[in-house]
Amino acid sequence: MRVGLLTREYPPEVYGGAGVHVDFLVRHLREVDGVVVDVSCMGAERPGAQAFAEQDRRFPDGNAALHVLSTDLAMAASCGIADLLHSHTWYANLAGHLGALLYDIPHVVSAHSLEPQRPWKAEQLGGGYQISSWAEHTAFVAADAVIAVSRGMAADVLASYPDVDEQRVHVIYNGVDAQFYHRDPDTDVVEALGIDPSRPYVAFVGRITRQKGVPHLLRAGLQFDPAVQILLLAGAADTPELKAETDEGIAALQSSRDGVVVVSEMLPRESVRQVLSSALAFLCPSVYEPLGIVNLEAMACETAVVSSDVGGIPEVVVHGETGLLVPYSADDTAAFESELAAAVNELVRDPALARRLGKAGRQRALTSFDWAAIADETADLYRSLL
Image (tube, rainbow, N blue to C red; front, side):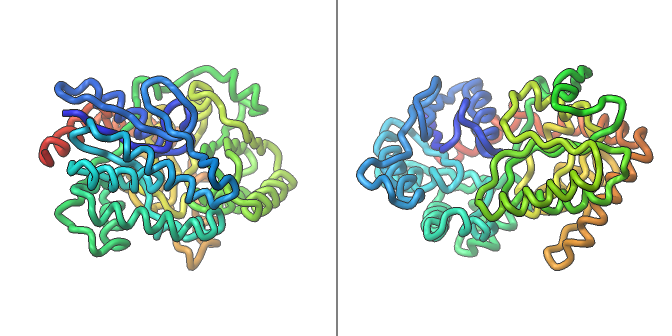
């Protein structure tokens, strides 16, 4: 069975959870007997994949979504030797849809996020958001199978796209590389970043996008116990407006307390592992999260998670067992921020609880989110379609 796997992200150009998913899924699918995986990705040439430029020189000033569609056409044209196509995110969904029509082969879509659930992307893409939404909807409705990364995501797929056949939606979780993500006892990286190892700290790792809820975290931080430090590994903001809001929140937090460290550049995975391992807790204030791979990475590092209860997160983080979940409501964000702070402060007062949650999280990551098992389940789904 030859699988054409279509994606925007592929190592080393990985910036989000979907890219992490593709990285490890491909590694483990290539170890499954009888499965050959050909990866098509977007961007610069790199080992292990055929790369397609995401910039069409015929319209250099065109909306970014148009450049993606142009790349999709080139990707679809290259899929002729595949027995089945598997696309990831709207960036590659249309390539999978067109390739399936062109070569009369099955198309599997993985739902990592959904455009209707992220209306704030209109800020970032302008009219391109209408194009990305159309491409995603077209591919989902026609797909032979839709893989949802959580039960919450499966419900979102059917709510967002009621014309999708429920029988074609399958839940296969994301996984975590628990061999790589494990507790690192060293503190040299966090010390170099400006963290005092004699004091507890909480950590955030992620992009600055509306989805990740960083402004909520910054406002909650005003209520954190003064003993705890705050370390934010936060990438560039999606829009100038969000950057201005985030910069204002960071300035307010830093003026109100000490021990607030913000790192904007992307750190090596080994450094992120140490940041997660040494933290009292990992914070996930997302307002939308289909699953949240970084929660799994923190759990694998034996770190307690304090998170919103949105999307697929409650299927990963078990409240009171591997972390603390905080109810999120867009109608009362002040209450969410106060309860997020209360959960952090509970762990500051009771570090033994944080350690117990962290150890249980590691065990859960090992037993329930193994990539090899996920790859086998995915390959079984492929076979059922041929």
